[in-house]
Image 1 (tube, each protein chain N blue to C red):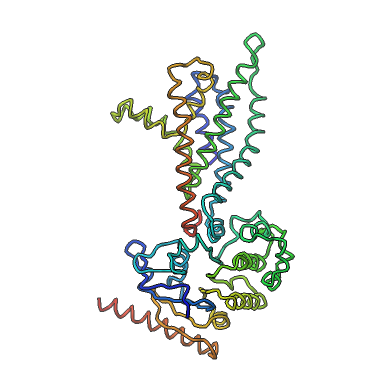
Image 2: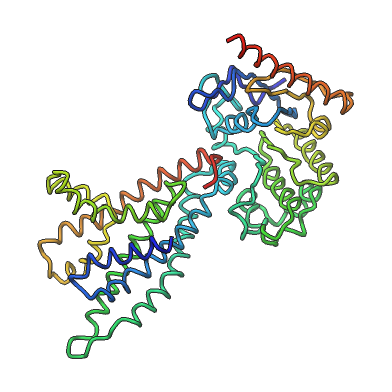
Length: 224
Length: 242
């Protein structure tokens, strides 16, 4: 589990290495991924059949209970994530005043905020839908854009198809470019970044709703 | 009598493996029915079908005139299941009861709670409760909402004889109030104490119906063994003939 976490941190950091220092990228990717691993465990715990069996026998039990549990998980996630993010920001190399002190910190704050939301949606979706291997599935889902970038041309997929498929993956790259878009520095990327960041929560909400309904309807299958 | 639960020709299969083969069952309000059978006979599958957690491959099940899932969603059911504490280790029984009961203040005065003796455990974490104490809390969770249909899967697991007596007492209270109760169990003595009739489930089918009234435990056990052996022998003969 930890090895998979470290590999994914280094892989994701490497993708961004052209834009920032590798160490800086690792610092930025590590906190959310560690938080994801912990949250995956918390969700797996709550996903146990006995929990849902207890909920499902009540009249009127349904999606609202599931969303309430997720809201509680979101609160725990924030409590967990904020100190780690704070620690990471404190340990960031501080540029000289001449280079502008606030800029990298602002950039990191925008990126990490977007990262936090996306990672929460990712882990919640996978944990609600999958019975086992939440962390592994989550990392696979996160790696879809990278896989498509390498495998797409090799498989003869057209660029439009590859880009469309990438919208199904968590928009971590869009999050990385969000600051540039907000500053008006990447006009050509604006539409893609904004579309991806807006459509992903809708995709996750749909999938989570399906997963929660299934948990309430048939909670006595084998415990994960 | 007014049947709350009706099952007719219920079959269930997982892939090509038949789990239940044409069951018929009827439970009236105020009636306590037992199902006994060897491991793998299909008791838990029957329970899941009656709760609407699974759908039968063929046949019909109705509870209060509707399908089990609709009934569960609209009226709620009481379900005592094995291993129910997993996932709730850090919760307290009071917090879990709040999922099922509106007036927590009246809990300690409730006759079911008093009979089960859970008042002293309400604010302890589930992980710190003994198996019997947790079972008593589970029983309170299933009984306090006063649902009309109750299903208990191996309710005696982890209970000492005193607690088993209290279990029978609270089930009798709910039956007297008009609940239809199904108990799935291996414990013939317990079933004989609390049920009006016992169905023998072997290899997915009911093969005997026993009225335990006035029967000694040894007579009941002999009839169970005879029923199971005869059914298994019949299956072996059929297998050889095929």
